[in-house]
Image 1: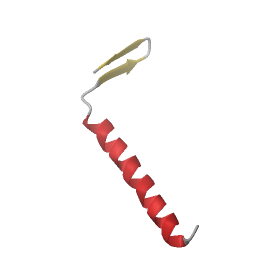
Image 2: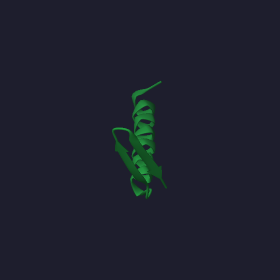
Image 3: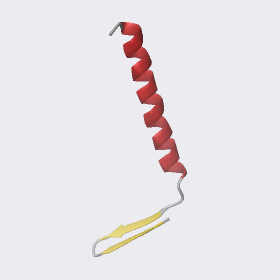
Image 4: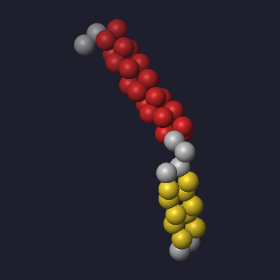
Length: 42
């Protein structure tokens, strides 16, 4: 595998990870995590 292919692969992985993180940040979820109480809703 040459350097150009490795760079393209790394960029593709970076875009996928950033896209996933952006998607997760846009989800409207409510999470309350206290000792003895855990409430999670979407």
